[in-house]
Length: 235
Ligand SMILES: Nc1ncnc2c1ncn2[C@@H]1O[C@H](COP(=O)(O)OP(=O)(O)OP(=O)(O)O)[C@@H](O)[C@H]1O
Image 1 (cartoon, rainbow, N blue to C red):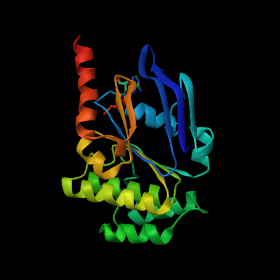
Image 2: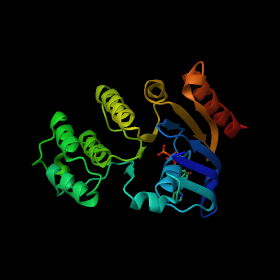
Image 3: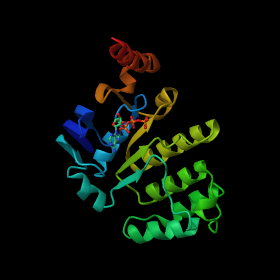
């Protein structure tokens, strides 16, 4: 398993953002994490990459603690707003990625990817569009050839064509290298084309964790789970 959580929970003051979350993600899986606003998706992803510590339960990433997995460089993470350094150029970002990951960095792939995306190496990140910044952040995460890639709403800022291309390319890159992926999204329609597994989170709880190949009608199953949450709240 590249990722395991056991009764994982996180509470902010008196409010539980995530409760009783038990998941097991096998190697090479591409997991789509879906749920409404405030469901607990970002909280779960931040627990996985060690930015948050659990209130209860446990999380194991690549067989160890999240902080150790992050230090090893084997986890690529792109946060929700695809943070980049506004004053640094595209080339500076690649140099930074190479410097931080000297043993794993694939300079040829990084250079080829930014060229293909039409991102001029001399351009400062502060002058890129939101979608271009997301692409740059993904390039940094992919080029360190991670064993696990964690993406928090990676396509939120992309136009529909770029969104599909981004997901297809992420899946192709991950499949070619055997990289596992956990990505959160609001776009249920994208899951079937992109992911091998789906996890539905609502109200801080995992409502469904399943292999997509085993589901007859993914969109209906996911929406049914989310609908139950709405009914639960209304009751
Ligand atoms: N730093 C924080 N302090 C207090 N409460 C927080 C904090 N971060 C998140 N929460 C709360 O935890 C719950 C889960 O938030 P989270 O950001 O994980 O949801 P999400 O599924 O990623 O939502 P979205 O789709 O809107 O990004 C929400 O109720 C939110 O208000």
